Image 1 (cartoon, rainbow, N blue to C red):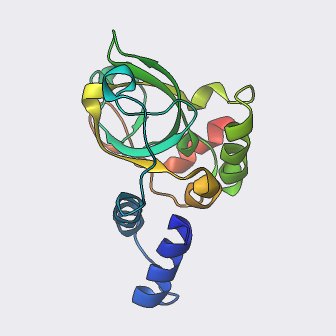
Image 2 (tube, rainbow, N blue to C red; image 1 turned 120 degrees about the vertical axis):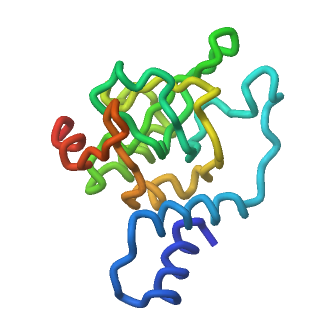
Image 3 (tube, one colour; image 1 turned 90 degrees about the vertical axis):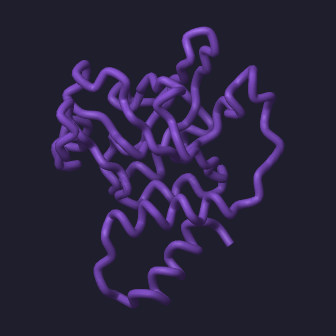
Length: 169
């Protein structure tokens, strides 16, 4: 069963058709992804255990939050580059796209990197990443539908996602 199918099944079983909070979805995503069988990954020292071209879901704390109008605390990003000398990764975070179409866009990224909107490109400092979970390629589209992002400003105050999505229609 795909992780998104497991999440949907758990929601139906626990809540039926009732509203479920962002926090529930966020925690459930971490839980379900942590229980997925892991493929062999590349050597940790070379790539921090990350595979270029794969999607990961993680918790992030910006080292320099004052440099950004807002940033996502829970990215779902495809790894594009890894710089071990600087301790950074370049990722394409689908959460900067409107949920109405980001699943299909993310699915397309797996096959072609030339259509990534600039707003989705972010450099992440490895020391700010925690709880990283690999997302199966066959469920990137399914997991992208959940609104689990948490955009915050330099003071750590929540930024309404619609404000972020409206900039990239």
